[in-house]
Length: 174
Image (cartoon, rainbow, N blue to C red; front, side, top):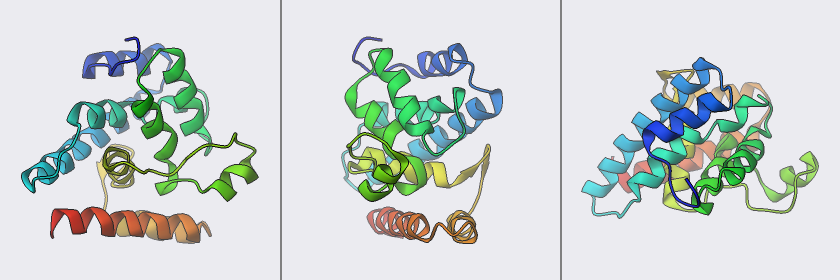
């Protein structure tokens, strides 16, 4: 796959090769479906989207769950993807999808290396947002994810997800 994007089949094969639980594979497939729907709607609005990157990023965003289910699964997944020679933009999606993004301050508290762990590009934002719309492999309202974060006392993450929602909705125009 050397420094390019994997096909849908290659991405799913990579999840399985790394022993991702089937529930995670199903979740990633559901996130990819929503992410591509969002990409299509945005493209119809005249916004240029790298659909291949969105699909690969959505399919592989939880690659790190093959090793851990903690908050660092994004970092772990990016390392696995890097070891596979996958493209840097894909690594950034995997690294930045967690919780609508992890701030520099939070990353430092986790002991992570200095890096950007918040979604910056539209493709990164689409995948992060689509992930928040899927619980296991079922679509859920964004309000549910925001409420869940608030109940876990993750108010900053809830606010990031709310802002991400507002940004995507405003781009969609509805």
